[in-house]
Image 1 (spheres, one colour):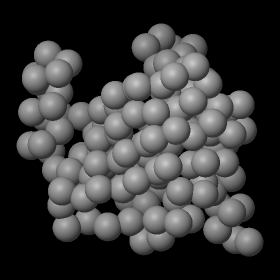
Image 2: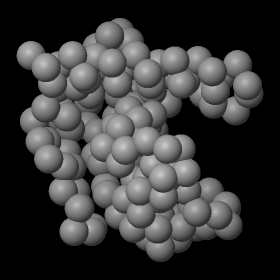
Image 3: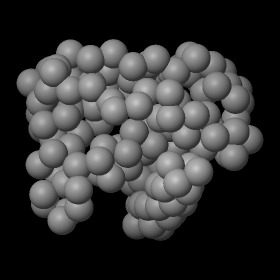
Length: 141
């Protein structure tokens, strides 16, 4: 089950398509869907989570809490809509593309991908790009 919750005025355009896409990425990584909850929030909300749970005194676009059980993906993914919008400008991309990159970034973490080292970051970006390409093909169909 993939669930979307909103703590801001933002809403996904098509939750069903997004759920299908996430499910396809998870299964392509040889994992299965358990319970995944997305929470779309603002900078203040995510900043407080970052301080309280991760002891980081910084803004971030995403925080994921992995509750995976073996090959079953379970977890919570918090996304700051404000940070995604700012990052889209900073990275010279559109909001929707940046949002989808962040949405799938959390899932890729749940599938075991890391992004601490240079090589890990390169692989993570490659997997994000593959997922975004799959989404664009899905949207065309």
